[in-house]
Image 1 (spheres, helix red, strand yellow):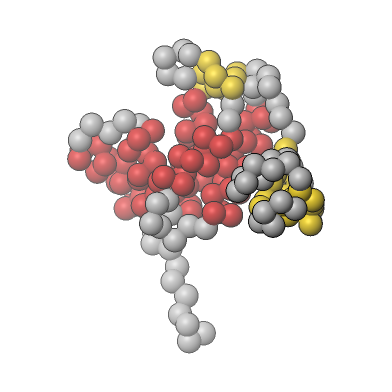
Image 2 (cartoon, one colour):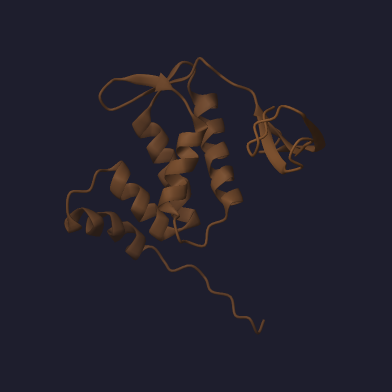
Length: 160
């Protein structure tokens, strides 16, 4: 493994542990050259699953694209990196269990939105605006109507 700081391939593993519900291994590494620490993740790679885009172009499924899209939607929101990773892992697991060779990109977007609305409603609307290609304010209002009609989440008092 090459160090992301100095590029040396002289490192050692300090700690290994399972993560993403056992679907990955997280390794803490130490570079013997520059003495920096960094983290790597090891996952099973599935080459078979292809994402079918709106224009019928096919590309390999990449979990990192889900993470990046959700990170953008959660920008300046109180959503942890671990929550974003878990959401992406859950979507990836469901896609891999439901599809063998091809998955429509719109299905992945729906799965992300289903989970994101429970995590952060502002991030949900941000993601939906890109995913559904909102053209004007009316599109935002139409997306917000179901959220506004839902009962507000319970707020627990600090005195209890």
